[in-house]
Each structure stands twice: as C-alpha cells, then as structure tokens.
Length: 355
Image (cartoon, rainbow, N blue to C red; front, top):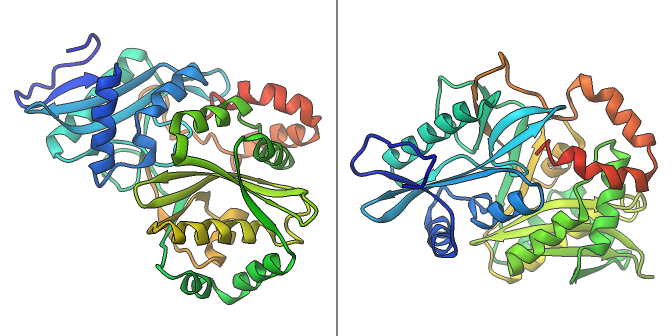
C-alpha cells in the first residue's frame, strides 16, 4: 500500500494512489465504464492539477479482488484569500466518489477525511451530483446543472428549442455567422478573457486551456463563431465524454448578443453533436438566479440540483467562495476597472486558488 493511505479495516477493499501510466490506463477504463463517473473523474486531471496549478493531488482508487471498484480524485488548495481545503475536484462541476460498490465508496470517503485531517485543512468538499450523506453540511441551493437528451434528427432538435430562443438561432443563421473548430485556443482565450473581465472576475491562464487540449486530445475542442467578415464573436471550449458533449468554458464579444452569436454557437454545437451520434447535451453548472441560468432555461433545459457536501474542520459554516458573496463586491468592481492586460497577467495567480 503506498505511503500515506490508511488501512480500511476491510479484508476485501484495498486503497491505492494513482501513480503511473499503467494505473492511469486502468483508472481510465474504470471511469469510462462506471455509470456514476464523469469527465472530471478522468486521470488526466491529476496532471492538470499538478502541472498548471501546482496543487498537491490525492487521486485515490479502491480495489476489490484485484479490480478497481471506485475512484476519488482530490486536490489540496491553499489560499490566503479563500482558505485551505481538500476538494474533489477544483475547477470541476462534478466530483466526489465514482464507485460500483458501497464498500469502495465508503472506504474512499473515509480515506479522504483522514487525509483532510492529516493536512489540517479547514474543510473537505465533495462535489456530488446526488446527495450521499444526509448528516453532512451541504450546499444544494446555489448551483444547478442543465442536461438534456440530443434527439437523433437535426430538425427535431431545432423544433425542441422554445420558440423565442429558436428565433434567435435562426437570426444568427440569417446573419451569415460562421462556426469553425479551431486548432488553437488563441481566439477562444481572447474572447473568454475579455468576457470574464467585463464581469469582474479573474481569468484562468491561457496555459491552462492549452494544457486541456493537449491532455484530452480529441475529447476537448474549441468552436468559434465569426461574423461574415471574419471577426470572432463567440467561442466555447467543450469536453466530450462517452456519448455526451459538455460546453464548459465560453466567451464572447460585446457585439455577440445583437448578432445572436451565442445562440448560434450553441445550436452549432448541438447540431454537430447530433451528427456525431451523441446522446446528451450537458449545458453545465450555473448559479441560481443568474443570467446564464435564465439563458439555459430559455433553451428548454430544466435545472437539476447539485449536492456539494462538506466536512468542516476549522470553520463553522460552508465557505461561499463565489461572486454572489457580498464580501467580494468591491473586489469585483475593482477588477472590472483594471486594464485587461494587467488583469490577464495577475488573474491566474488569484483564480488558481479558487477552483
């Protein structure tokens, strides 16, 4: 058993740490097959966490009779501003344990708590899709996710979009907008960085997005929408997992709304996903009551609650490290007024510890 992992007390469950290419291949095979696993359980996130963010990682897996029965990816986040935590997983909307047996799931969560106590973190956070522990503090009213089936026929998908939003898609088509899959993140990053700056939040580094494309290959791409004269208007970086598409990071120019570029962009993603035979369009996480929340509902997607569960060690309440927290209002307004070049330079040092 690798150093640092506890004995589960069960003769049938053995806990180990992801530590080599052979193990990574076995881990990946399990994640692809496990019904409760998500794109954010993939082994490649360990290299992203370590290489881009310099976070210590604890990618745990449980074996029974020599077969992986569960995985739990964790990363340690240290921040003077946002605190000291162990999270499964930073920058992921879904996380927590993915397991095919209760014994494996219980052993992995017990080990996560043991590591959290050993590290002296203020809290452990597991970003579960479903509630696992009724007695753990949980944040269930802040974030929701939006998922919907992709119909097998392109026109059926168009007609499934509510009338008002469908009119916006057709407006984008009429405006002669052009969608293209990019080989690099350059156009995407320019639009993304400008967009988050307008909203008063720091941008993740361009290096991070480059690392995502390098790590996940064909399972990560960038779609950019341009005007007929070639001006980039809106862009999205998406993940692909099994039969799902997950548009995950996005950005747009201020002119995008008037030209319906955002609606056109997501329609193009859905249309192309349909052509590939994908089955699920995962619109991703949004905060309740925000503009993105309303936008996704207007597309006919119904919100589904997320259940982020916590073990609190050095704090009395669940942390609220998000832009809706009033204590960050002054910081947000200051960031909006900061020159974009400066914001892009220092933003990654701030956001790397937010997750």
